Amino acid sequence: MRLVGLTGGIASGKSTVSSLFKSAGVPVVDADIVARNVVQKGTGGWKKVVKAFGNDILLENGEIDRARLGQIVFSDPVKRKLLNSLLAPNISFGIFWEILKLWANGCTVMVVDIPLLFETKMDRWTNPVVVVWVDPKTQMERLMSRDGCSEEQAQNRINAQLALDWKKSEADIVINNSGSLDDTKRQFQEVLKQVSCPLTWKERLMSRDGLLSIVVCTTAGVLLAQKNLL
Image 1 (cartoon, helix red, strand yellow):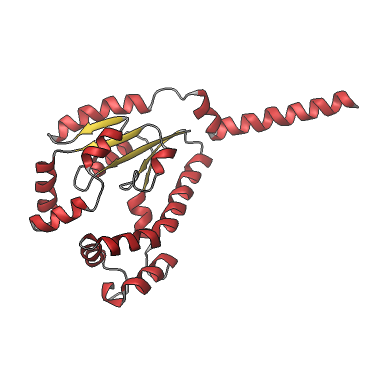
Image 2 (tube, one colour; image 1 turned 30 degrees about the vertical axis):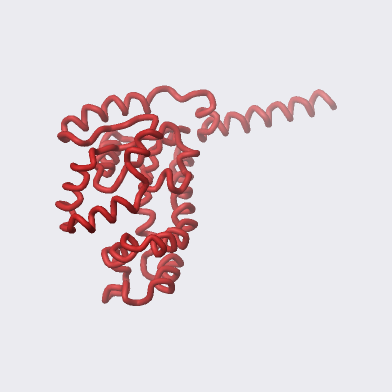
């Protein structure tokens, strides 16, 4: 099994690349979707967040106001660290569960789309790591345009994450998303070839079929040994 780590920075275009993987038929485990699910009204994650941040972060229907919560944590590193610590176990379990389901269905290559891939040390479990990079000026402009936020607010959100240039230096593969969508798509096709190449023997052993082969061979060996001893 090959776990491809996909990450980037806010407004870098990671979601665009994630969608390209999906369109190409590569299954994607999206940490953002998992994160939204673990804070749905009434869940354990929801209860922890409401207890820590109060009812002021709730909408009229009782769901968490993600925009309001985002404003709070992006402007306060202590509260951001608190939120991450509260939800990290729930999100990690959710990601693991989604990976397990794909593995059980026989998927041999899957993408794990995690904004905080390096921050949570989950890059240790993925290979290769793909970083979607964008130049700082373009990143700022896209974020302000997308979210309608001020330059100060945009900078706070960018500063809340590890520097994108650092992530770029740690990547196995870099997609430069500073240009046009067509340019990004051209780069993606090359990346798709790399992540779709034949599995290594270690990756084959980690796949469902590889594990089943080990179990069958081991069982056969044990039965044969027992037969010879009788």
